[in-house]
Image (cartoon, rainbow over all chains, first blue to last red; front, side):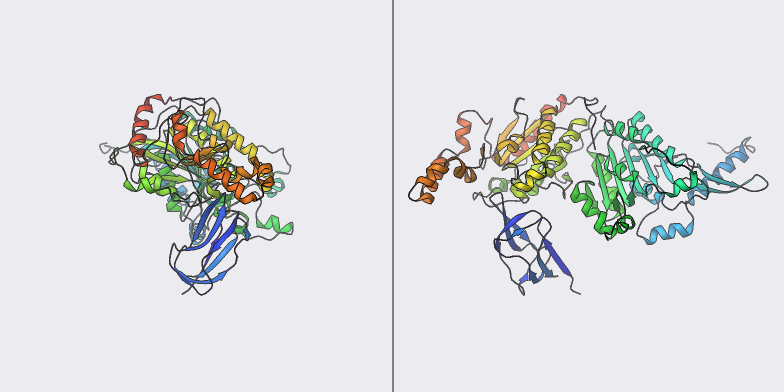
Amino acid sequence: MSRDVVVKSELKASVWQVLVKPGDRVEEDQELIILESMKTEIPVTAPSAGVVREVRVAEKDQVAELQVLVVIDG
Amino acid sequence: MAEAMEDPVWGPELEEIAERKKMALEMGGPERIERQRSQGKLTVRDRIGGLLDEGSFDEIGSISGYAEYGADNKLKKLTPSSFVMGRGLIDGRPVMVGGNDFTVRSPGGDPGAGRKSFVVERLATELRLPLVRLIDGFGGSVRTQDSIGRTYIPDNPGWREILDNLATVPVVSLGLGAIAGLHTVRLVASHYSVMVAESSHMFMAGPPVMARLGQTFTKEELGGAELQARAGSADDVAASEAEAFQMARRFLSYLPASVYELAERGPSEDPPDRRDAWLASAIPRDRRKIYDPRRIIRSVVDKGSFFEMGRLFGGSMITSFARIDGWPVALMASNPHIYGGGWTDKTSQKVARFVDLATAFHLPVVVLVDIPGFVIGQDAEMAGTVRHGSRALAAVYQANVPWCSIIVRKCFGVAGAGHTDHTRAQYRYAWPSADWGSMPQEGGIEAAYRAEIEAAPDPEAKRREIESRLNLSRSPLRTAEHFMVEEMIDPRDTRPLLCEFVNLTAKLRHPGRASFGLRP
């Protein structure tokens, strides 16, 4: 049975790169989004394998702490 | 003991004590016990059994409760007090433990419960034993006013004892159900607190009160374990009560029984001269790329000894306990995954509390430094980052325990300077990836050379020219030429050098009460 895996931002940051799109199959620990904060690139990875259902942010967006970035059908 | 030759003189009383104990073990009765279990919660006696070494619980006040007598003046029923406490062992070391029994609803008063909950605190202080609180209880209710026919000026019962313990013995609080009213501060006023996911909720006022104010929340939304751990009111979240007991046992394993003792060296099977080759490549050359700080920690401490506390709060610094060549240490490490390791208001609060904890229990401090500075911006100013940051710096300068810092990468600005008390003789090393200064030049160039850049025909080219000039003097080896860093090391030597540090400085730890008592 599939379940929603909600991937959130652990920090307030800007979105540097979006590496996946809806429909993409991703493996556990695969990089989904790269955030930028304090001049470092902070990868956000998939907590488990699945298919990307939604990408809720775009490059250059500002995201808040705990904002949902990606939803995966796990 | 040999069997008695005849009936003991005090036989009837002994039988009655045994009978009363049996009644007390029934807690709130089968129905209420079933209700507790159906909510995924253990009973207080199962909890004590799960926490302590098997069979080690010595109860105090086991037959206190509300007694009902028949017409013949014989005991009909004893409803036990809703607070169970006593002595026990954790890994063979004595502790005090006390917990609320949520199943008990006394038909007419609960004479011992309140006093038992203070006495367990007082016993911990006086016997100088660690204390574990098992918290599952609501706060006050206006029903009290109805039943006593008056009202009263509030006080916080037990608060003096709670504060004495914070300054004296390790205190662990486990949130194992509803936590409201006075119980919220009992949870928070500890050195380590854990709430159990889904079954534990904490709030100053619960959903029914908030609903009256027109705000609808579920228990989870208002005061779930993860929320409270992210807020820093609880330290960690456990997946189950059993896991929470293991976390409490693990936390206590690094600390002495009280501030009047020193933490003991444990067995170490991990060779002190172990050098993990990958450490020489742990930090990426590209300054924008980050790394896994926990992997570095695991590589330099004794195998299996890393125990993190407070992962969800102020995450740009990892605060943890570990063993190095068997010696317990308080280990902090920057985490570039959160704000690149930059300090927020929360990071600062976390550092201040953790350093105070290490100081109170005389643990040497090891810091792996990668601090780009304080996180900046209007939100940071509004959050009082400067004040919280100042408090963290004060804690670092008030610490009198052995202190070793290893600069693995960035060390910038006021927050970076907070990696050590610079007025002490430095026990400090730096990796070749070190990068330091009053501010990172990436942002600093625009500020310092604005006029020059703006006046140039090609401002971007001018900016790059200044940057490449500054890069030439950025090497940490230039700092070392001037002996402004004590020693540049091969990252692979970090563990052997830390083992030397803890062995050299073990004799410098002094038992005794700190000049200040910890605040929650």
